[in-house]
Image (cartoon, rainbow, N blue to C red; front, side, top):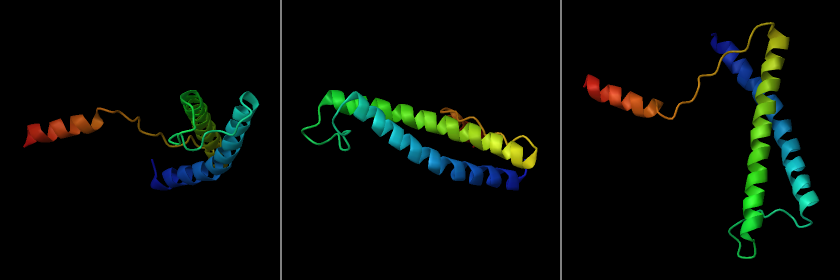
Length: 110
């Protein structure tokens, strides 16, 4: 795949990702306030923050991040295809064992 296509895809992802992130942050905060009348616990290390609030905020925030990433990726791919008429470049699948396997292969070669 051409380097230009990969750079274009990253640029599209940034342009889409920034507003998606802002909207997601506002939605997560509104969901928290709808469920609990208190402000979300910004610093869970503060002594007055209860464990249930800290864990609930962490779970809600994590769900927001996952949804935002999904929306950004799918929207960027659709936009790339609409602009260029081509399929977007494929992203390599991240494998936790890749780093370990590469190190093991280097040791075997040495």
